[in-house]
Image (cartoon, rainbow, N blue to C red):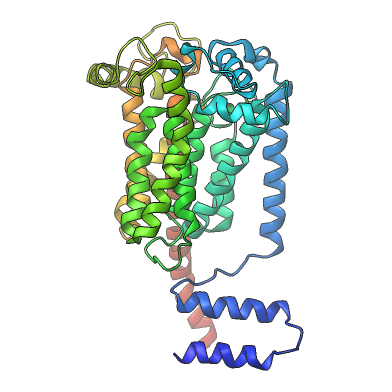
Length: 420
């Protein structure tokens, strides 16, 4: 191959000669472009400065929410958080948790047990912080190839902007300033948002290790919230099928999923005596068949999403769209993306999975007008990714059309002036 011989001749000419950074960059560019991947030019200092500002702002937001927000004082003694902490303490001391721990599953407390070695008195602080910043990073990197770096920064801001009151739970940031196992679900969808935009239609570009990582995140997510298997498995399976993964890659992916889920499964068998036990009052089949209700879905869409006071009932919290009115643009942006960007099948799948997740929880008993005060919006927080992307994409699309319109209007006049 001409390009490979060119690279080899160049390498031979560099023998015993210090290699400059520009030469390494050229070599990487040649190899990757011949494998079907074009490197995007960096936007340079402005983008780096913006990313540093975002990092500082996100970190300050987390520190405030975790340590200073008065509305979250004593959160570690709430029902979910108290059980998380007891389970994490038991696991960190090599004790089996109580049977009640499986009402919330044990994978998130297991991560807290690891965090206890860094912060014994606050085991979920490092875990939540890593999941928070990791999610933000994946969202930025996933959006950048689709809408550019400036709009991607706006997207991250829209996702994580909040009112600095951790008890309202209308914003994604609130999910991370209090220990919730839903953090893992959010992180998983942020990861797949990035992965599905990472040129997976070019199998040679996707490194082998990513399949193991994707499987590991899938297994951990299912171990943290078992119903999330309905949403992460289609995304994980799509990556394997779309990339025409080799048997070795299938093995890495499945092995990673087993490794992520196995600790939860082993502990569950040791405590409950069987893997088939749900850990709740009803079994898996009864839970699934009795979960969804179309009547409940229509009521929750109105009460929980649109307007908590629409039916004249008492509500301690506002609905999602009341707190984040910019999300009214989301259906427009998502519809545009599903129709205009018809070649981005991975993102279309992500949107559909996110909508399915939202509808699934809204049709279930975990969400209601009365449960807004108990932070029930956390169940659909992973769908905030697609909802906010829809809003930002509608603005991105409109700005592009407006710019094209202005360019067309200025074109003839500029031609006339140049000809004169």
